[in-house]
Amino acid sequence: MSLRHAVLGLIVELDGASGYDLMKLFEISLANVWTATQSQVYGELAKLTADGLIEVAAEGPRGRKEYRATDAGREELRRWLVEEQPRPARRDGVLLKVFFLGQLEPGRARAYLRDSAALMGERRDGLAALQEEVTWGDDNLSLYGRLTLEYGRRFFEMRKEWAEWAEAELARHAAPPEDADHA
Amino acid sequence: MSLRHAVLGLIVELDGASGYDLMKLFEISLANVWTATQSQVYGELAKLTADGLIEVAAEGPRGRKEYRATDAGREELRRWLVEEQPRPARRDGVLLKVFFLGQLEPGRARAYLRDSAALMGERRDGLAALQEEVTWGDDNLSLYGRLTLEYGRRFFEMRKEWAEWAEAELARHAAPPEDADHA
DNA sequence: TCACGCATGTAACGCGTTACATGATTGA
DNA sequence: TCAATCATGTAACGCGTTACATGCGTGA
Image (cartoon, rainbow over all chains, first blue to last red; front, top):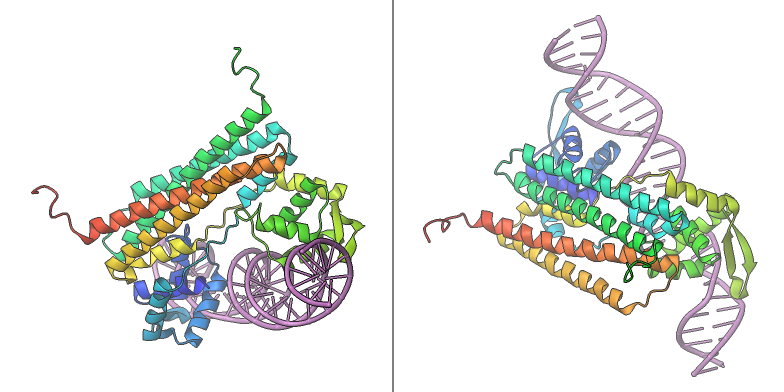
């Protein structure tokens, strides 16, 4: 149940927001941390309201509803942060493919890893560019957003290096070490 | 739709397996790559059979059904490996918490990161020990399983180092740089 | 004989994705 | 005026989790 706390957390930090505001934040700030669709966000807002963790603080033009956290909501966010420990759900589409790469010809398998390394390099560069671009404020979301962005950069860097290493491993196996000591 | 291909892939690689066999493989070999529950596995076997990608090749004692891949199934696995590219679903419970760590007292936030670093170190050591223990064969599953295991080790190592870095960053912000040039 | 392990299945519920559906405001 | 943007919602479907339910075979 993490979407719930993502939505609640944003409302607490911003001290009030609409579903539309939240969507933009999910697309930008939380893009590398937790994704959510529009229907999920509005659905969760309804549930959080029903459970008394947030409330409609004001209504604006075009049916806009500005939600704010209740005391119970702030308490629940804190409880989640302190008490609940997430078990990492290990599920990775790229790794799954690697696991079955033996079904392809060796050349194709290595090409897959090479492409993967290149893609990870691009992603890393994208985040690195973002880090340069953004001017960070002194607020919480800036400070902690900076930490998660750096995590993303390190993540892609790690994957790139791993893919390069894996490709070399395959090469080592494909070409038996005939030249190891006589060349 | 990756569970489908995980199940199909295992059946192809093993050249025949029962749901029970697959469960053990999900618990051991695929634990760090793709998780699945028992009901998922049996459900997927039924679907794959209905779609003609696998078939019951033999029935054993205790109602055991040995599935084997059909030609269509082997073709589908190949297609998935070559054509389909997974978009990485970025969703990470630990990062989500970090994003909202500003809601805690600075001391507690840093403690969270320290604990996280310690946990990641343990996980890394666990995988490293596994790497030492296991005697690897020459089959595909051994070769590619070794690659994914190394990925897991690097992943935890990266997270450990990141958590330590993040904790230091918070320390830097909590204690303003009063001693920077006069000490 | 009896416990453990092998072996398969179903049902209920919640989360996530995609698509559909509608309408108000504002600024060029 | 009209297009873009703001803004909210619903419905259908599939995947994932938990719990329930059942029964056979084998070895100590």
